[in-house]
Amino acid sequence: MKYDYLVVGAGLYGAVFAQVAKEKGKSVLVIDKRNHIAGNVYTEEIEGINVHKYGAHIFHTNNKKVWEYITKFAEFNRFTNSPVANYKGELYSLPFNMYTFNKMWGVVTPQEAAAKIEEQKAAAGITEPKNLEEQAISLVGTDIYEKLVKGYTEKQWGRPCNELPAFIIKRLPVRLTFDNNYFNALYQGIPMGGYTKMVENLLEGIEVRVGEDYLEKKAEYDAMAEKIVYTGAIDAYFDYRLGALEYRSVRFENEVLNMPNFQGNAAVNYTDAETPWTRIIEHKWFEFGDQPKTVISREYSSEWKLGDEPYYPVNDEKNGNLYAEYKKLADAESNIIFGGRLGEYKYYDMDAVIASALDMCEKELA
Ligand SMILES: Cc1cc2nc3c(=O)[nH]c(=O)nc-3n(C[C@H](O)[C@H](O)[C@H](O)COP(=O)(O)OP(=O)(O)OC[C@H]3O[C@@H](n4cnc5c(N)ncnc54)[C@H](O)[C@@H]3O)c2cc1C
Image 1: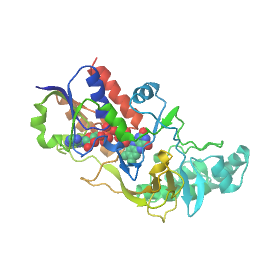
Image 2: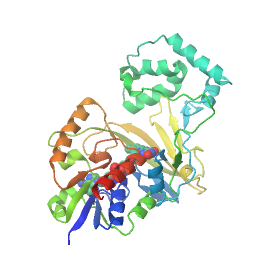
Image 3: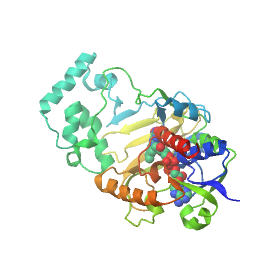
Image 4: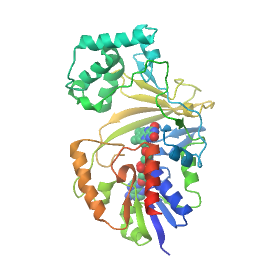
């Protein structure tokens, strides 16, 4: 028997497509080359804590349709993302808001804070920023740049801010209110019980095989289905024949600590240049955990090379052009849909990837 669809990749895109296809009466097989489902939103339980194995994931959206869809498969808690910045032991609220400005300068009113920022911007005298450093100073002044932007950004990009292009930070959110909520989203939270459980619910009743690499047995798999939904890397599909698309990578160092509370917050950014990691995630606080132990992940920015885990696509001209060439090849293939962050070489937040999969379902399964 042939399946109607073979879905390559059990991440969010693949799982949503499979769920809707099954609901529409289609037969679906989902495979993933990893030994687990859920793709990059995978959470693994360690010491009773749901650990975000491929980086911290906070669900946030203004898209009501996506929210109504995904909440059929998980109940979300009331987690609000309020990261803390640690600059050489001084703690600041993020995103930049009245708590940050009060700690930085002792200002109390929004008027005082605005005046301080304007004073520093004027003193810097930058009219046309030539690089990221000048761009940041022209947006938030020197103190915030020096303590909260410079070191963090240089660790992220592995280059000094005055050698980075200005366009990387078009704007820096400045709030003249006492609001620590990082996202301005209507809906926000963490699926109770972890993301893996949510994806398990999406895939309920669907045949799933993990530890199966489509590209290793492509002909065999192609013969098994009428149509393929491919959410792996587009350049890998074409055996890198035009060259490899580049990514930025992150390295995670996980540690179980024999204490109930390490840093009192889910995310603490280390904004000085000397601390080698960019931030520490303490996973239990995504779900207000009361376990006796805690699990932390130190995050390091790292250069990416072929074979490393691809995280963030590089949105420059070179990679944009290369992707456009691969896209032409993809469009010429028959019976296959390329989707998701790797298939479309695109940074997607979770809500955007769900929306994209739902749109595809509307077109494909109408
Ligand atoms: C560090 C980091 C943090 C993030 N934090 C947030 C956040 O806080 N909030 C938010 O909204 N979004 C966040 N995101 C984005 C989120 O991770 C993505 O939106 C989502 O994971 C995309 O789902 P996907 O299905 O497209 O891709 P993936 O989850 O990568 O799924 C693709 C799957 O395909 C499988 N695959 C690939 N090739 C093959 C093959 N040849 N054969 C079989 N299987 C294959 C892979 O193993 C993988 O499981 C973050 C992303 C990163 C990198």
